[in-house]
Length: 136
Image (cartoon, rainbow, N blue to C red; front, side, top):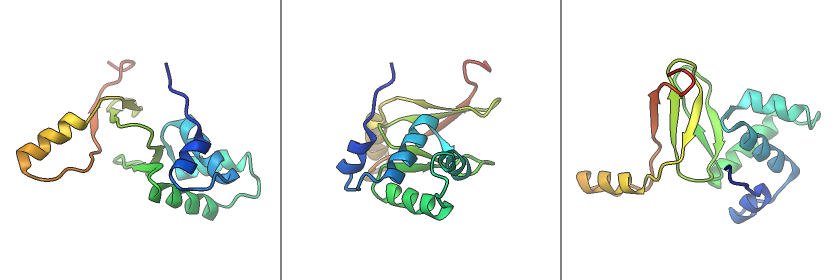
């Protein structure tokens, strides 16, 4: 069962005003899961005809600075954006390219890395590769 998120609360809890543009941007990212800026802009442009690409970039950067949105770099693809809702690992299918979020707690792994290396680990981004259930 998919968890419901209130985008307006997410924005306000992270110190940002819930403007119409930010609500739409976050809503589109939430719907897509992972989306590049061009596809995000195309989807938003259908809803707000006067919207500029500069406004989308400006809001994406504000959302990233507030810790609401993060970038996902995938080799050979444009940078993708996603909402940072809960810790997860990315699985990228080597056959079809599908990106899925695997909701696996990463605290134990971070603690293990810290213990093995003697470093302070604040967070982690993990991407695993293989085949999705459809391509297996």
